[in-house]
Image (cartoon, rainbow over all chains, first blue to last red; front, side):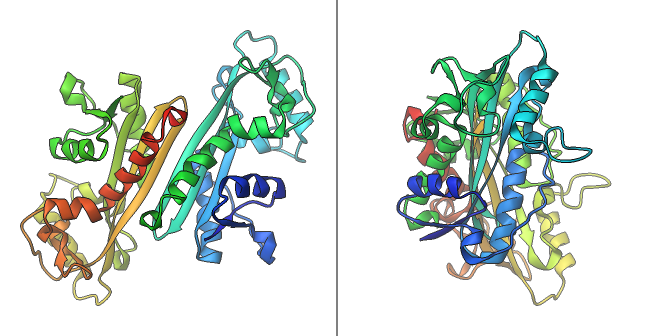
Length: 198
Length: 198
């Protein structure tokens, strides 16, 4: 069946299409749909649901939406749901490198470096029905950026079990262990469980 | 594995234990745990997460929690998350029959009778990880109560496909089609999907 994905990111679309291989994934730009939800939620799951409901109201078909960010323990979970807007409160939006530098300055030499990525993903079926999965990727904040792949905060989150930052993983490795990959596979299991779930 | 269920209702425990048959379901009273979360959320899923996190902080093991209610279209979705507290804002708590009478009076002779039960259920795994399912049971509000089974608003929600109210269904029938039963089976599918999901 057709499942809409509330994103403008072709890369994310390809990743999701690989996981939801029994379905057809479409994104708003495929059909020229203008989609600009206001993320007023106070949690990742709230924001994912806001995006999902916004797109569902347009397409009237099952929708997947996600919201993700980095939670740093020594910063009381910040930047959290504001990860993409971190440091941009009062003026121009920072780019990913500038956000990383800002976060490293905020953390300074604090010896507590634990942090985790969070991804809340929703499969919204309409009329108050949905499934959701929120998954994490645990790591430690480095003292400086390392690695050239990925995006966002990937260069500063070090994964002890892998011996590298998220930015140093191959795309396949990242998709397999990432917060987003794990959440998507959980929802794909439900989406593939037969008509009982649709 | 042991999964805690944030309820004080032995009947709900038995229903969930039947669905999560590969796991052991425990409730707070099994171990004399005092558990009294304050449901300050603005949605079913928020309240289910509040309950789940509250119990997880005590037991430090996977927790299931749910929140449910009746949404009446002609009343703009009310009583919704306030279903259990409906009519009790300023004084003593109403019993189920009194709440049904209050709702029937509020709806009066309004010809729009459509309504649905909602259940948001969460399987909380700790450290910001959880799965959730929100399911519904669609029906119509009768002009008066009918049926002697079930509880809460069951006697006033008529199911056209079944030709009876929820309160007239057998317990087995109700568990099979109910909002709570469907949400629980979706989560049980994830809980049984192997260690990847724990």
